[in-house]
Image (cartoon, rainbow, N blue to C red):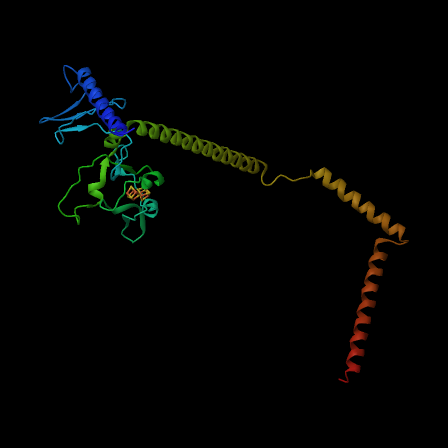
Length: 289
Ligand code: SF4
Ligand code: SF4
């Protein structure tokens, strides 16, 4: 029917007007109830997620409380507990960044050996598309997304190319912006540290047990005056006697004494030697030498 769309549009406008009226009535007597006072007439107003009315905010004095997962430009974390940058200059974030707006300069020691920290870290905020890939791929929780969106400047270069000093924030700042994620990460890190500690303790206990067994064996060896014989003296004597008896029995079977057997062996060796000499002489004669 002619004019139906127009009526629908007006209906949507009317609904928002009524919702806004209702929201305003609910917030009487103070529409700033629950807001965060920053001083100098500045405040952060929280608009509940289920509120459908159009809440007017006097920006820039008043700002909305951003949801935790809001992302703008990345920030680097300074671990206040360990007093060090979390970034190890591994370069994974720079590799995965789709518009390639991260540059990392790895630090090195006095001998020129590369170290696991940055000497500088740059992000071109004019190119960054707030995709958060760098955060997702960082294995050390060293880079997170900042909520700070008021970055307007007159010149793009160099103001929008942030260096390490401008990007770095303390861990507490991150904890305040991302409380839920921070708690989850801390719990995971604690669990990992506990597992690592247990593994190291087990490793140390095994090494101590091995060392104790080794020293016990060494003590036993020195008490017995060297390596313990595998057979006792009486056993060795009995073995020698048994071998002598076997040899005598073999000689008796061969119809002679032990000396006869040795003499026969020697004669056989002489015979073999003589034959070898004969063969050598024959080969010499054939070749005409
Ligand atoms: S921020 Fe993370 S991924 Fe990027 S270089 Fe540092 S440790 Fe590696
Ligand atoms: S948020 Fe995305 S575009 Fe921005 S620096 Fe990280 S990976 Fe690059």
